[in-house]
Length: 146
Image: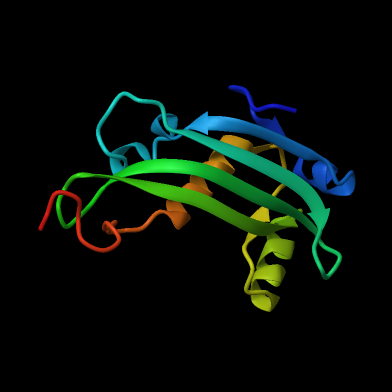
């Protein structure tokens, strides 16, 4: 299944069937990321794959992989910096608030509440926010500087 404007899915069903959905989202369209990106009108495609699976402990989970490149602003020279994005995360699924609280007590992994359909774009946005640096800097000397 390829992503579309309606990227909602049943996380427990995806996990139960070990199914995969995938797509792409323009990071400029994600409200929590737009202000972190370097100015421009160029699209910022982020490819995503969400795979339903069972965790090592046998719990329903999702493996989320995101890849792409995000244009950021270097905080040292204030020029554009294309930041590579390659993030893989496993999220455990909770079916209710009590299960969420219990899992949060016994695991270091991220647990999400999946009582209804989840939105792939929201999950991708969350992962991008977590993976992008707070204060991006060019690695080594900034281009154009001696």
